Length: 296
Image (cartoon, rainbow, N blue to C red):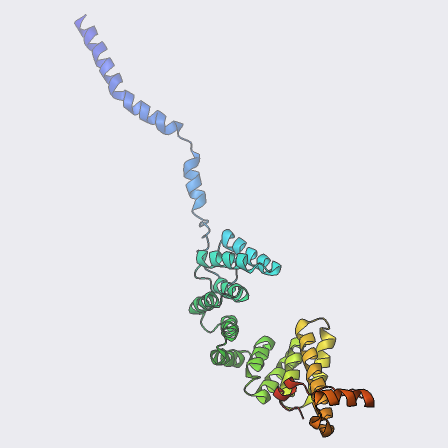
């Protein structure tokens, strides 16, 4: 009897000692076997690296979806003429991807169109820090300088741009326009180069002004006619045409007045009476004609 009790106790003890091993074995068996195979499958293919924020040359490339969305919003706002909204969106895009030079250039462009020239300069300068020597950045900065009246600095930048890209019609035109006041001959050469690359009404108009400053009215009229044929409703062309016509009319009046010096000795009352009697139309000399150069 005692041996039987001892055997039962020994059996129970052995069962208790073996139970943790059984539980542990059951735990291992019940685990999903796919975990090991998943690790094995993941080893050959390395996970794709997401592009870093702000990398990439183009707008929206590597800059994230939100940045690309802001860049598109800038373009849409500029197309509508809403420069305030364009500046806000461009600022967000540039600050979201600060290493993207093109976004800073976009901010500079939008700010220049919106009249915020200081912000425009900051945008171009930050873009040029990230992409030194960029033709786009240097050209945009020169255009901002020109809008601010800083013509010498604009000309210095344009020389760099034209040395790198001598067939840029926009930069040739701007450089010629800036040189128009001080050196019409140099301006004419630059403007004709721009006209050879890409003809436009604006270039024709500037060439007409250059010829006018060089006292070549026939050549000036020829290019003014070309500008009007290209853009008959352009306000600048119409304004220049009106000023030229007014100038010619004033010069003709002054010439007519000089041909009749006897009118100078007449008092206004006698002059009016003599005019009615002779039925001639000789208006008084306009005071504005004296201020017009080359008016003979």
